[in-house]
Length: 352
Image 1 (cartoon, rainbow, N blue to C red):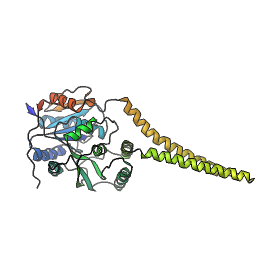
Image 2: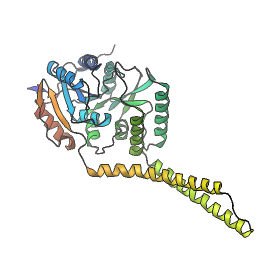
Image 3: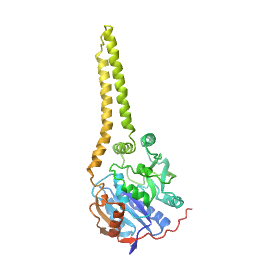
Image 4: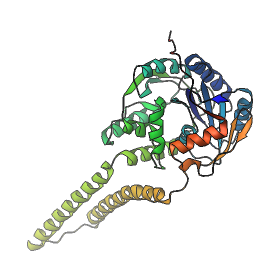
């Protein structure tokens, strides 16, 4: 009977065929140094249109620690990450992208920090190689705006690259929202969270999976998930607009008493346009929050797993796996992957 892993590495993958084998090699080597053979490498195929799943299938058949998870369709990075975390069984879980911008070798620096009592060790970028000036400028603006708007402290210049204890992962998976912003949700959980500064590498291969449209949607999810400030801004815009409207009415009335008429079609149209724009902005802000409430109220499955592979064999998971509690998910995974023993004792890794 196989034992449950001590360490899980979760990597969402979308069209990563060019660099996936190299990622697997480096991630497995880092995990081997940190936890011996007591680890699993969970590769989540998020509806790829290239040969990503074929590579994952081959790796799962030839590398005992690799677990392949194929989603029924493309769910997006955050839900693919959630699916991978749901399939993890380790007492410590590393969430990392498969593009090798975040070096897997940093695991060897994260583990000792966690052994000293940290609940979360997250990578904080000091430099980003291979990024355009627009991506750097927009990312900087986003993180600084989010830090001012969010109701919880979300560290700047961080992604989802982090090592978490099992209890943090279980709390994260118990949070039911569909529009997920994982780095913010982990910050909300609290506990002892420690930054590990590092220089982010350029992509090993391929192109970014976050074009401008997805970046904007991601920013909206982040802000609406952790801040009601935009609603307050809309309220204040309404109050200011009402004040200006009252002042204009008073001005018009005074001019009428003086026997003068207010002329100027252009000025009238300008005022109407300004107030209409403010109203539309406020309605749009309210609509963003209302739309998310509608999506949450539907209670559709967060993600749908088509196939899970381990050791070349296909495992069966319950259809409602994504909606199960953390304990039920663990039991279903142990039954499917053939392990119901606790993790083996872990020897502390050395960092040179």
